[in-house]
Image 1 (tube, rainbow, N blue to C red):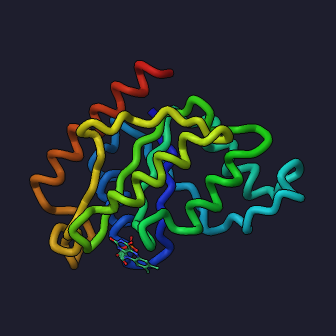
Image 2 (cartoon, rainbow, N blue to C red; image 1 turned 180 degrees about the vertical axis):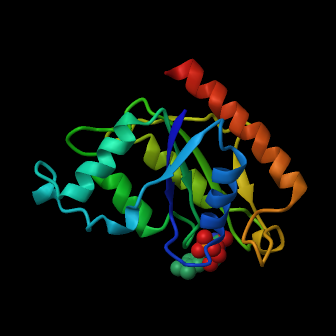
Length: 183
Ligand SMILES: Cc1cc2nc3c(=O)[nH]c(=O)nc-3n(C[C@H](O)[C@H](O)[C@H](O)COP(=O)(O)O)c2cc1C
């Protein structure tokens, strides 16, 4: 199964990128997780939406071909980071590549609330007319990694908290089932 992943942080030591790396390794053989380079996308410009730059075309094509999309994002000021919103804005125009696409949201933060506000906001964005993604339903499926600095190994930069890892396993399984059902 091909899953394109959007990570909402550009920081070198990003916890959310570490979560992506953990998942990429852990679910190898089951899922082919590829990272979309959202940092290379220019700021969205409506004047360019019909003939977008090559990087935008490639980004949209990757989403279009994927069986599903994972969005792993920090919370910035109770919402999603601008770099992620920018990518979603490109994807929402002309050929609307997210329409009907299965999406799973995940997030990590040193804070207590595990990016819950960002994820609620993200769900609204993903439901907008230009996006209309099929989001893994919330009841118990939110992956909210709070107090994350304590859950990652400083040396390897991998998630090592056993409780979180087994929860993640079950939610990834739920997403795989969801994709099979929806595609
Ligand atoms: C501009 C900015 C706004 C932030 N706002 C929030 C917030 O609303 N909620 C939260 O839990 N953490 C917030 N944080 C802290 C981030 O969760 C923390 O920096 C986290 O490590 C960022 O994710 P990353 O490690 O993947 O880069 C904010 C950080 C920045 C830089």
